[in-house]
Length: 463
Image (tube, rainbow, N blue to C red; front, side):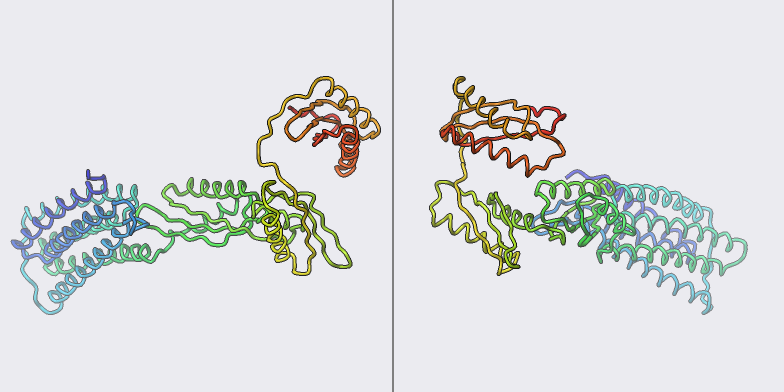
């Protein structure tokens, strides 16, 4: 597998830390400086940390599999935690050695040489370069392991500056400055370890990124169709922020609209957090203002059943529901009755066991009808009858787009008419039903009459 940018920068950092550790140990050996020795140990630990980082990144870059559904990125957090422990161990040793030399009279002679100073100065330049490179890639890839390495090199750089200052003080005749510099170095290391450990533990404990929950909440609340937010769970793992969002939507909302709402949530969060792995769950809930008609239609649609002519009556304080249930015409009566009974029981469960529920079973066509235009003579005769019947109902004007077709079930008549936009649908529908009844009395072959009512002044409906 080719090395990624993360692996490349980690490998170079490993070589750099090895070089720094070796050169500082040599300088410490010949100068006797505790400050340089503490830096050498610091760099040696950095070398071990970079090895851990490189191995963690190679493992963490592996994709999710059957056993690790969220990938392997958290191995980087474990590596960062190991590096944190190493930083604190370094701090403890340096502090103890510095205190022993300062307060127990065990000062060692420190020989300041130009090449020791050159090694420390060179290490500062290397640390600065590596810290900047690691920080850049860590921010780009959200790698905690690389961020840990960047902290190591950054702390190493500042502590080297302190050691350099300590050597300068020793050179001018202040021997205790070397131990003081070592103590200051330990403070730098401890501070870096505390920062790294806090962030790493936050990731391992699935702490949501600061402020991210409120940002996601605001984005979700702005999505049309969301009634309430059930929960928001954010869990960082490497560069990915696993995001689980549960919202409530009206159970009367069409399935297609629920999908659109979920897609809108996903889109809004993804735009704000490009590295988020988002799961959206929409829980349908009942609304206080649902009508009886909405509840019954919803119960039927959930069972993939078509009903029409739904009526609700209040009889002596008792609710009575009736409707026509469409089933496959080839279905046996026993099976159809079982289907109707199950639907009726579901309605009683929703509305109350004392509700009266009755269904009328009728066949539903489940095939494409093959038809053709009726003969022109018959079409003209039916059109004339339609015009005459409609004339008796002043609400129905401008009869147009009349089409008569014949298929295996009989004659199907289609027509458009215009009505006052202020009139009620109920009044117009009653007149259309009367026209249909009159047509069926005159023409026994007419099976269906489909009338499309348009408001006067509206653009004609396209065919």
